[in-house]
Length: 118
Image (tube, rainbow, N blue to C red; front, side):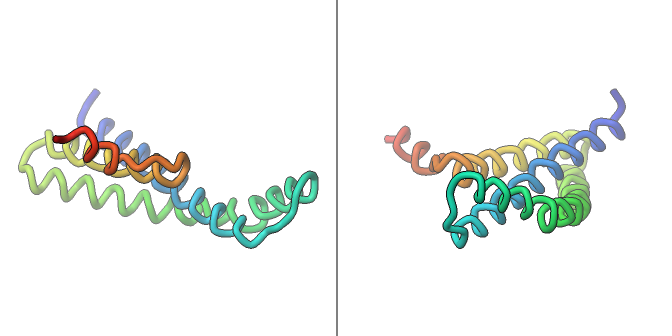
């Protein structure tokens, strides 16, 4: 695979993960203020996704794709080689992993890493 395709896939991966993380954050924030159970909650969730989060996700995806592209290009320039894309991608994935673990699973990766170190 050539560098252009690798860069394209790296940008797409970081953009999708970032947009999903932002979407999850927004959903959790909104659910704090919704005090319903059962079928009413299902309908409210569906309504939120259709009216608010579907367009917001598309908008966020566009911006995160641009930000991801700029981030990966900067990583390439800083390292001065094609390995910069790989390095920037790995750093972005690590950051996203920490954020996903915290937001979606209530796991503190930083605390767990500190516990492993003497």
